[in-house]
Length: 249
Ligand code: IPE
Ligand code: IPE
Ligand code: MG
Image 1: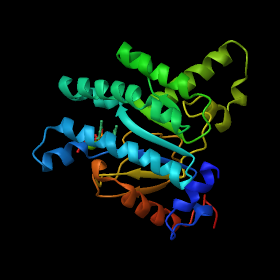
Image 2: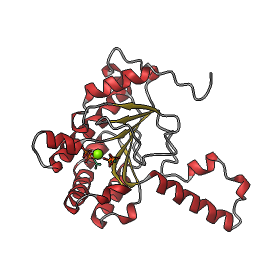
Image 3: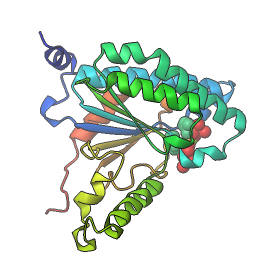
Image 4: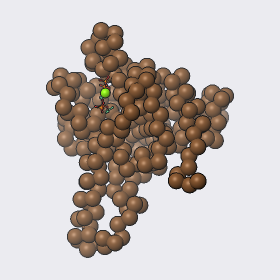
């Protein structure tokens, strides 16, 4: 039995396997509030948030969802305390190391997007190793956005294209949506069908500004560490009730 067949057996009966989003994006928000509600330091929320992410990734595999992209650290998140930023960088590094064997075993293909050159070198190396080790995997395409900003991504793409124009490789008139998309970090991925934001915040916070043009947006009050399989099931049921029109009547 292939893993695909196994996964579809596990899909909840009220979900239509032909109407699942191919690509789910998530803004994992509310870790700090989750911790605060329990009288814990914010860091505990981030740790539990990482557990929730691990479960969601497995759920995507089980239910046959091909791509998951999550926002882990924005270009604006450097504005947090040094203690929190350092904790998050170490947490990411540990996760890329500790979860690597599992990702390999589960056929996960990892991608990390954002301005990676400005990350701590040891984190950069851990990302590099994990990406290399999973690059030929054929399972869920798992993309983690770290030091990512949607505006910065578009500006960088424009700079790269402008350089090509300057060098005479392309003409300005040849710049179109397809070309710009190909210069984004997500060039190889279809646009997300569904964006989930936890913790009730109704904003995009500089995530995938270009790619989310026609995503269905689902906001839940659930805080990220509590976003479990049941909560994901609810989000997918809600998604399957949407009528995606793409501008048509
Ligand atoms: C999301 O949770 C995680 C990151 C942005 C790294 P928050 O840390 O933003 O949690 P809240 O919004 O303060 O509750
Ligand atoms: C968005 O959450 C960034 C991530 C989840 C990594 P924030 O908590 O940083 O967003 P704002 O500040 O509420 O918009
Ligand atoms: Mg937040």
